[in-house]
Length: 633
Image 1 (cartoon, rainbow, N blue to C red):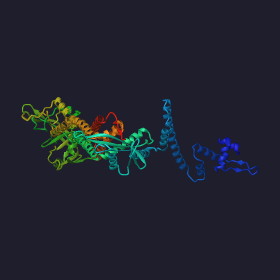
Image 2: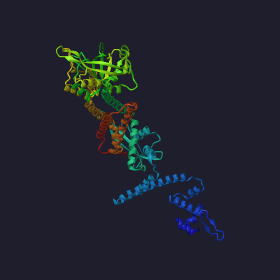
Image 3: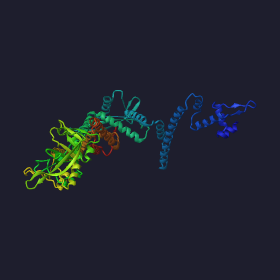
Image 4: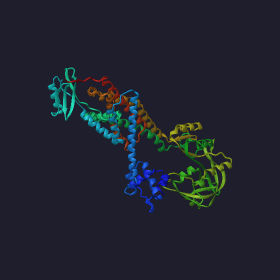
């Protein structure tokens, strides 16, 4: 391709193509017959890359190094990105200066070239992030270190000679004091300072006077930086200097903050610990209930009506409901071989079978046994005596217990004859040796079916249960009373009606009452503690800040603005408070102690009270008007 074709294809002018060839970025071959340039597709591709790189403002030298593989494209792009970022900042700074100048022009003000040159110099040299902040702080500290000196004499200065002697004593012999037409000047290291002084009353009773002497650098200029940043850095510098100058008072403020926060942590921690124990108590306390007769002498072998049973079994406040029905029986119509039978529901079976040694046939376990009919388990000792084993069938003549209304005693009445398959055996162990079990155990549903088939009224002979949630204990007691249960009355005679209930809730109630009392006592102090937080925070902050009254007056004499003084003192006190807070964090929070919302609210209240005390003190001790200083002549 010739030059015109390449120019059309790439959009790069002939002059630029020649320039890139001259700079060594392009090396087209020449035709032998006429020495015209003949550009290949590779040359065109390279021109496209050159065009792309130049649009990114990458220098020709870097493009050449990329093609020569002296530097990687990645490195060039990274460097160019940093360069473009710097240019962007410069343009943004220039844009801000233009906006400021435009506002002043609209307002009819004259533009100060020196002022704006200083601002632009700052914009050009300012670094971003913390680095720029640190550099500005160094400049400010260096500027403040030589801009002004001040000290207070022990007595009033009346003559120039005494002023000269005081300056030499306070600052050193290398400070040269000279009397000029415009007044007394002081020179030090090629810098000239003007002297101002103000009479102070050091002791009103004794009428003793002192003098505040201030040396101000002539023609001192503020360093070039935005006013907000300069003001903040000056305040930060003042805070550091004040903390250093009043180190013991600063330590006292930190310790006071630390002490108060630890006290609040101890109070809220105690309250939180009581609340935690109240939450844990129901989970760790098992309250059991059992049905008794009226005087509480019998909890088994009594007659419990079915309406009581249905109400308890369906109660939302009850769990692990256990029911048992007792029968007696004769084996094989042999009156000389009586035995006892117990019908148990699944919950009671689970509890009893955990305490004995059980053997099942291959098809049964507690759950399947409880759901079966015409099956039974037998005591191994009883089975051995009767020559029985798993898989055998036994014939029984069963009898149920009934209350004789005349004799007021339980009697046995025939129920039915039954044939039961033995599907399991159980053997008493050391754990269950104190608890007697019947010779034969049946599923409770099977016993109830016998009563239903024979049209006999069913009575349970023992019922026990657990309270699902001890927090709902009062609701359960009310429900039991509504059902018809009574409290045990030991003075009554013994009967067999199961209509009294007993709950082993004494320990739970005593513990809950003790925790509730502790919580109420702690909460009763809450209002007092809040009031003390406010009062202590305000009063202590006020007293600490008021002790610096003379220092504030001197600062106003030096021309420091009220806003700057207030900001400096507020930042100083809040910084000291924060140090105390961080100390409390290390002692309280880092070991893993949880923080309650009440603790956070108390800390915020204390900080706010402390800030109010500082603010009130500052407002009272800062003079409304700057104190005029007299120049010595």
